[in-house]
Image 1 (cartoon, rainbow, N blue to C red):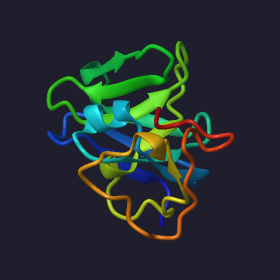
Image 2: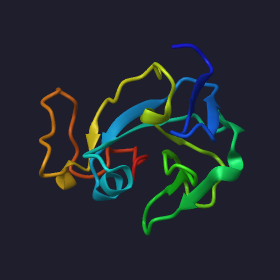
Image 3: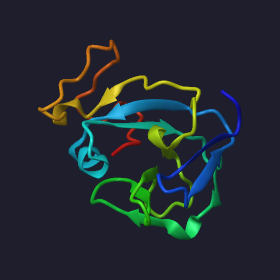
Image 4: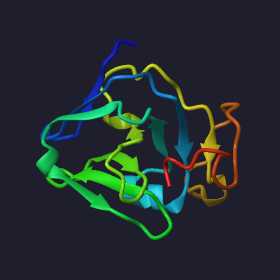
Length: 142
């Protein structure tokens, strides 16, 4: 892994960099992530506060604040899910691993919200710890 870690949305309108290694990563199987991503789980990394910087296309970012959750930031042009953050914060602390160019330097370490896992796709037997709700101390995806 080389710093900065770079990434962007599907259409290329938004580009970003992460200037510090990710702190942790995991899969979120909550219904909200399923519907937002169109997949059975969302792979997310937790970034150090102040380490995520938008390089281009900030005007294309929009925010959705689900009830009881973190703000979800996406590209308004292509719909790519990119970040999450605490409500009202300017600091992006959650980064969708699918938005990262190349190797993010981290692998998902756990599976959260497995009580809500999609019934149409079994969770793989990959040895990762599973939590029925949020992983203790980590609720990035939701």
